[in-house]
Image (cartoon, rainbow, N blue to C red):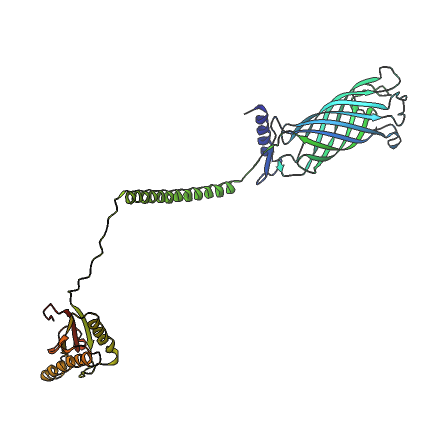
Length: 384
């Protein structure tokens, strides 16, 4: 840490301890060795503070200041002021030049608003010392040691440009006054100056940071911990996804490396039995309209496959007398056979029908009111 930064932090701690400013939630800007420089041009007026006509002896004045901000509170600078010869001050002769008097010195100022940012105003006292000179008919003029005190107020127009107003009093510390008394801080040997100016700050930007109270710090820490937890969760998800991607890439490479296999399509065995059921209502041997599509499917298959025949077996449920059910089962088989040979013109030698009595094909007894039609190749013996 540089000496300048150390001074900044010491002054900051002292100001906080003294309670000079309320900093909670404020932004603090500290200058570095490469920042905080400014140049200022002033114009105004100067006049004797006492013993002479104030407005009768007002003279125009210009000034130049070069300044370095050491801390947000303290600045040091060098200045030069010149008074122009527009009237004769009592007790003095006319100056042979346009400049009647000058002052060159160093100063320091204390900014009571210096910590808080953004703050457009700076305000506070200033004090300095230097060397004054009166340009009169004396060939060498007249020089003296002087001290200065005053106030400054500035308003920032932008980050680098500011307007200022600076009232000061400069004392002649070397010469005794006209009454022979000490010259130190004698109002009769003092000059009041009021100047307005414009300054430009150059150099690197100052380093700014914000101060937080304990509650804000705790809230920020809680938010940081929450974000860390989210990051860990996202990292876990990312690792899982990466693992899945690696696995899928491995599987893909394995599939690409595997030799192609030719899979033969399974051929249809034309010798298996094809079974189609035709269902009947209770006590009926009439093929209903909703069962006619099944009979038609049998007929179409027989027409498309000339070497196929059909075996029709009729069944009945357990309802009613057994002898009647046997007869009903036979009639149902004959009804389906009659449709095939009559309506669809299937040769009778390809159709075999018989009654099989009480059916036990299905657990649901009502489904046993059925004709089971089995399509087989002529070379095979009749099946079920």
